[in-house]
Length: 416
Image 1: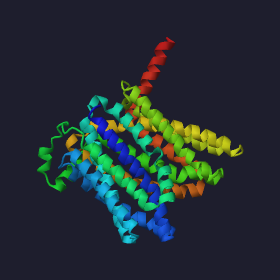
Image 2: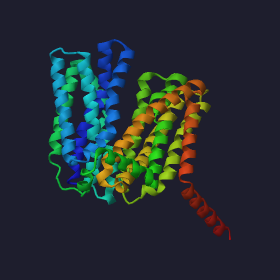
Image 3: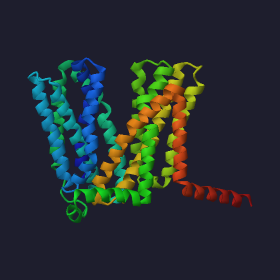
Image 4: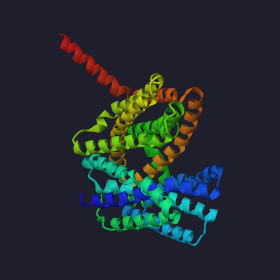
């Protein structure tokens, strides 16, 4: 714990800063451009470079000590925020400056995320990965809990430049804390990998995912989950709560809060029950996760004649449950990757995972949006999650078959 605590503290500071910008920046861009279409174009342009460069970043990071890359990334974010704050103070609101700033912030934020994931694996023993991933989940969610509120408050009172200055201070503090992390780490075997070309490294990463059946199975499951379910926040939840039940937008934020409460409770549960091997129950947890979302959809369909707040109360309960189960799925999945993917290719693996997710999520949002507009958000929610359950059953059919046979055998013995 003495080593990992510095990474946790640094991560809390950087996560808090990272949660402020996505909330405040769109407000500032809309105020500057006075156009929703230009705002959408701005964020599309600024996010593309980081998405496209993610696989290359994963390969590049492997050549250096992860502590140094993490320190370099967070320090660069501090410098970028300091420069942008000064430009804003002097009245330089040029669109091109803002575009360049956001592109660089997105790139170095991705680099920070990838390097810190591998650094986490280096600092934690394999037997304690699930425990400390649970703790990390708690701290991450607590860190970002009040960030949007603070960011919008500072923006409204002191202006955008003050928000960026606060971000710069937070990133500087995060960099200082990283400097205290001991250099000793697990041997990642980077000596051999450094001698290989970029193309060879990239191919090795793809080959590893393709040939390792367990890794490929979980990789594809994550993609399926992202495609069918990741659109909940953007499409299905507002489609159900606001469009169908006409609930006030002022209370819609409670949905995210309820989910976060479930996430925090789940992190505490995992940290306190580190002896439970959640990975062995991953298929059941996948199915249970989708079943909860199916229940939300059915509740929306059948409670339409009731008071809207009756449904909303039930929805909040399900969101807490959903947040709890989601982390029971995510933490063992992350721990599985950290324990099974060799350290010397972890950064390129997580880069490919992030790259694939960043491509598949917008496609899922587009598909779900069209389907929801045709048949309703709640029915779409039900169909999407039934499809996820079918995919999970297909992926784990051997394990499910063994479990079912064991259940029947047990029943048969009891009947004799």
